[in-house]
Length: 300
Image 1 (cartoon, helix red, strand yellow):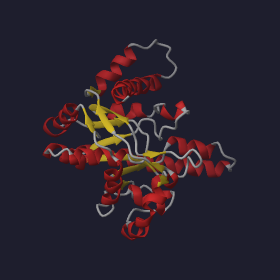
Image 2 (cartoon, helix red, strand yellow):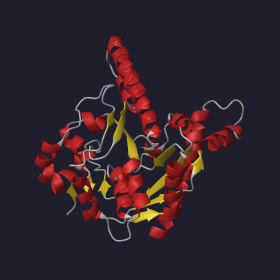
Image 3 (cartoon, rainbow, N blue to C red):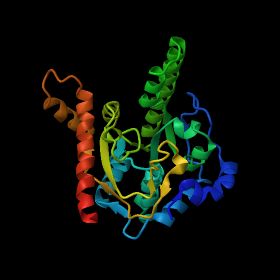
Image 4 (cartoon, helix red, strand yellow):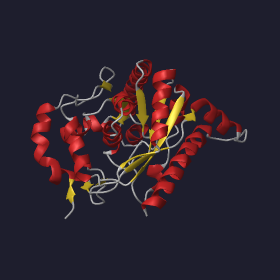
């Protein structure tokens, strides 16, 4: 019988809490968070338990070319990856490390994920499962929208908007430092996990256009299969996600030059296009869909 994440691995929870170091509240001083290596093995254990034979990286040559562009040519590298589960970030780092080549292990250690505040602030039960990996924490637009659309005072809304600006400005500075150190920034362009039957959760965020302007090259990565399914009865409770064994593949698309991609998309739009930023990220999401659908045919 299928078990939730808490049921299957909750027995490790007390040990993980003792090892936790990540802050419970995010402000401008702690947006960059190095991986807590003491907690990484717990996430890798889940992957080892549930990845079936055949799981791995697809189009490995594009991962290697991306790495070489960053390390040898000084390119500022961005990974844009589909997002289905909270195992997506651990999966790419684990698969690169397990690939067995020095360059792949080095790439795995260079990845810095952009993560929402919820992963820190939703409670220690969520925090311990995520802090095993290096992150830059942001105040997501969706989270701010929920506050500004709620029935709170104008003063509270203004304070929250100021908090979001302060945190996100600090996050952008942290990402700039990452680029200068030769780290690779990974972003989930949908900003949330995809929920079956809710296509809006797979729509790319228009803010991703800002990332394309800040980086030189982007590696789109599609995900097929997943070992952690959102529980339809408790879709917002990450610890209630259902653990499932599956063949999981992360497949890269050829590297995209960010400036050339943006310029091409902008040139193809009519002069009166009302939202060019959204159209640009829609183009990235179409690429991810194409790669995903091609791989899915072989899985079937």
